[in-house]
Image (cartoon, rainbow, N blue to C red):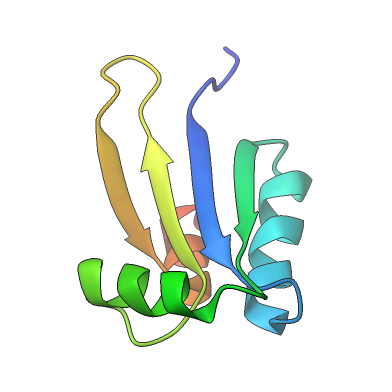
Length: 84
């Protein structure tokens, strides 16, 4: 069965944890959208406050069946979530 869930990643292209998340999602052949806010630090600060995170990346999962958005967390959280 094909996984049609989509992941959203907010982060910075120069962040090693953000690139680790992208590499992990690609290695698992999971769909994702990466929003690189390298030049928009204010957006990242607002997102960190909204999602109660102190660092990036911020990883969200959108369930393809329900459309429900689930907060996964950061790099280590995603690795745990995907059992990697």
